[in-house]
Each structure stands twice: as structure tokens, then as C-alpha cells.
Length: 620
Image (cartoon, rainbow, N blue to C red):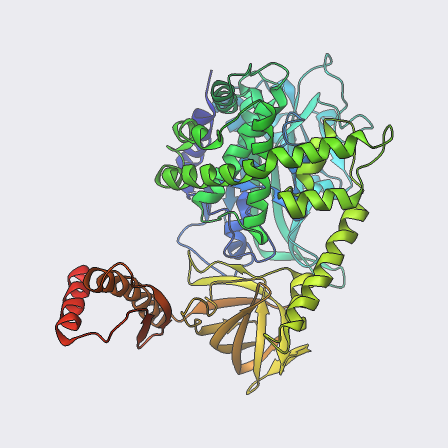
């Protein structure tokens, strides 16, 4: 039986033999698509190639892309563990053509790989095409010899892909496998299409048009191919399984969970093991790609996934943290294909251990509170929103964790009541912030944070990124656009710019849009919003525009060096003057640093020489 690792290699090797560049998976945090929380398909890293904004030294590519769907509109979290094919983390196999081959060769590649290299029975395969795509239907007849009744024409958007309201788009052809009449379900387009008899295994998108705001479809000058096939789904099929969690890779993680909890992998706790196996993958890969648990943005989604898995471990009777003990099993399975997982193994283990240790302190009390609240409910009654909010606010239970726990009891949460309690707390926090006098325009930043969310900071991993201008302000007042010569405050949804904090000054650099450019001179932070103080140097910058952000590298490097020097200086002071020396403040700028510390006397000349020599020794 071919393993998932074998299947991944077979796919990539097939397209390598057919002149495709094997491209590494991009990170789970998209750098070139500010509309996405996480990378959720193989085409994300190639978006600028499809639109013609970027060119590379290849026109054919193939990837095994790591993907996460656990936030925003792409969210499979609620169904994970309970169904056969929902995951927060999955791998998407794909082949891509950027103005090179088109429908005829894409269909031929797909048919050859599936029937020859993967050995699928030809009479078990059927396809869908967009109802007006006669060209694709004709190619399927020619290449695969499929009869009309196994080429199903679909008139809905299920078979027409769009990058957005405007931009590249085109029809799709999807390939399905028929598991046979002993399994309930009908072919795509039928009333029974949601059954499990016919399973989609591969989608080929033909990017042949550009859609304009007025609805016109114009043929693209560069017609391209974007395909996607879920590794877990094709793996289950090739291994003779009907459930992704029964594949060799997922099964090994489920058995690792069973081993550390001393529970039967197929017993009453089966769903708990499935959730843990899935969430182990998403949390580990997110941490490896630089996401850390927090109460904001991507970090909060990570924390939600982690805590959901930890509750399921608790339900299996685990008294001590267990998630970190499962990481070696994951690295054994996937570290070869994704070396970043091996490199980050110790960080992943320590992060999971610390997070689970902290959460366990409140998990027991929170679950007891939940049981007490449920015991007081009438038969079939929903948990009051105020109780769900108390679990969130006091015990660190994300709403979906409470919903997941209640699902096992056949109960729901009054979500409207929860939202009302959350809104009330935010209003109190905003009033408290404004009352401190910390910033005259603090209310503005709270309102921006509530409407658009806090700013995602990407600067630990990159000095360039793409974002969307979510707000423009001049003298604290919101504006729609700013022209050359104006000094404004620019807010974007994600940024590589460091905001002034902890004695380190903010970054400088450039923000470019399609209509203008702004020079960033400083960055502040309020209510989780990064405020880019900038002067428009060319054209105009408009709210809602996509933007390219670029940190001034030389200045960032100089500030970073001075920041490191303060740590070296602190250690040298403690060695020379004594362990009582404590930091009382600092300034880390590009051209200088200042370090304030506590000591009972002035530093003598010999002490100063010793400290200087110590720091220079550290540097050398």
C-alpha cells in the first residue's frame, strides 16, 4: 500500500518529468494576499503570476502546499473529527501553467496520472464541466474516451472559478470517483449529490477570462491552469479507505494519541483522538511558520485550535499536558517533506507544553461551571450567552470550544447573547481607555480595531509584505484619500513595520499603492492597531487599496543591532557591578542606544573600562 508520503512524491515526480518546476510550499501566513488569514490553496503563492504582476524563470510549476482552514470565511473547525473529510490542516497537490499549456494538456496530464501512475480504474471516473465549456467536454471524449453520460454539465458557480468580483476567472472541470451503488449518493448535479458514493478528487481551473465590474468577460491574453487535489482525499482512495482519518499518516497520529492517553484509538473516545490528530498538525505547522498563541488575529485562531485539542485530551482522561509529547510522531511522518517542521520541533514542543500547562489551570474549573450551568437548563435549552461569555472571559474558553463541548451534550449556545455580552465589555474597555488620557484620539483606534480587527505584525519573518489600507486619518480624523504632500496616519490589516515599543523606536520605509506612494517616518501602536505615520510623496493613497509595504532595511538592521547591544550591556553591568543591577528604561535607535539602570553609585573609570571590554568580547 502506498503511503501518503509515497503518493505526494509520485505526484510531484510525475510533473517534474513533464517539465514542471517543483516549488516548495509557501508559508501558512500569506505574504502576497492580504485578504487571507491563512494560505488555503496551492495557487495563493502564484497569485501575482496569474495576474501578470510578477514573472519567474519558469512557466510550469507543481507543489504540495500546506493549507489551513480555521478562520474567516474558510473555516472547517466545527466539523473536524466528526466527519470523514474535514480538516483544519491539509495538503493540496497542484500543477500550474502560467501562459504555457492549457486545457488539452491539463486534461491529458490528469488522466495519465490518475489511470497510469495511480492505477485508478477508468470506468470508475467521471467528470463535470461548465455547461457552456464544449471545448473541455470534447477534450475529455478525445483523451479519456468518456461517453456523454460521464461528462456532466454544471451550470452553477461550482464549475466556474473567480479570483474575486473582478479579475481572472474561468470554467472548471472536476474529476470524481464512483465508489459504487452500495454507498448512498448521486452524481454531481443530482438531488443526492451530497452522498458519499461520488467523491471529487481533483479540480482543474481554466483561467481564460477577465471579469470587469460591469459584468463583461474578456478573453485573457495569458491563459493559465490552476489545479488542486487534496492529498488526504486521494490518499484515502488509493489506500482503499472511505475516511481520511483512516489513512496511514492520520492513523499513526491517532495511535500516538491513544498511546499517550492509554485509551483505545477506536473506542468511545474515537472522535477525541481524531480531533487531536488533526489539530496537532495545524498547530505545529502554524508555530513552525512563526505564528504564536495570542489573543489577537492569527495567534488567537492558533490558541483556539490548541485549546480545543487540549479539551479533547482532557476528555480522554489526560491529567498532564500531552500535546507536546505527540510532536515527535508528527515529525517522523512529515518532517522529511517539510524540513521546517524538524527545525522548529523544540519550539513547537515547548509552546504546546506551556500553553497546555497554563490552560489546564482553568480548564477543570471552566468545565465544572459549564456542567453546573447545563444542569440548570430545561430539556433542550440553550446555554445563556452570559454564561458562555463568562467561560470565555474568566476561564479562557473560546466560544467554539464551548460549542464543541455542548455538541456532545446535544445543546447549543445563545450566540446572540454571547455577542451582546462581548459588545458590552468592549464598550467598557473603550470608555476606560479614553478615560486614562493616554491618547486624545484613543476612541478612533478602538473603533478601527472593532471594525477591521487589530493589525497583524509580520515583521519577525519579513521586511516586505502586502496589505490593504483599512483606514486613513489626518489629524485624527478619518479621510477617504490623501494626496501628495499630506502627512497622514495609515492603517493596514497586516504589516512588517515594527511599532515603537519597549524602548525600540518604530520602523521607517515605504508604502506603495497603484495610485501613489507614502514615506513612513514612524510607527505607533494603540488598541492593537499599528499606526504608520507617513507623508504622501507621489500621487494619492486611497482607503481600501491594496498596498505593498517595505521596511527600510539598513535602518531596521541598525536598530536591531543596538537592541541586541542593550542586552549585552545589561549582562556586562551585572557581571561588573553585581546582580542587583536592573533595567529601568532604554532607547534603541538607528544611530544610538541608551540604557537606564539601577545602581547605588556612579560608575568609576576602571569599571567603565571593564564593562566596555566585556561587551566587545561578547561581540567578537
